[in-house]
Length: 94
Image 1 (cartoon, rainbow, N blue to C red):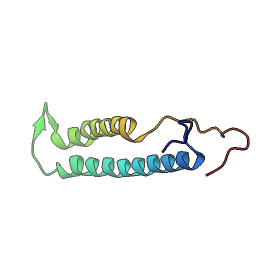
Image 2 (spheres, rainbow, N blue to C red):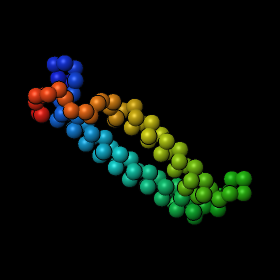
Image 3 (cartoon, one colour):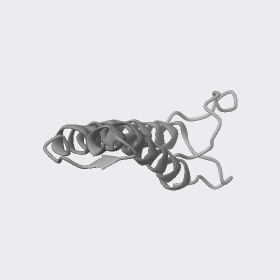
């Protein structure tokens, strides 16, 4: 996806930003699903850890750990570091 100079074109930058936005929305939905399953899904169990019901631990700490894992995944595999500034004068807006 790089031009001859090794730089991204304006179009490629916008496509990458769109990819990142879509991945972030999917990640949000996954975090909500994990929160619902770990919290509400475990509410029927009569299991306690150190006197705390497991659904509280799953719904809070479990969701937090999952969100951190997703953020690390996004940072390493989806997000790209590039400058959003305009290209040189007269540059082509692909």
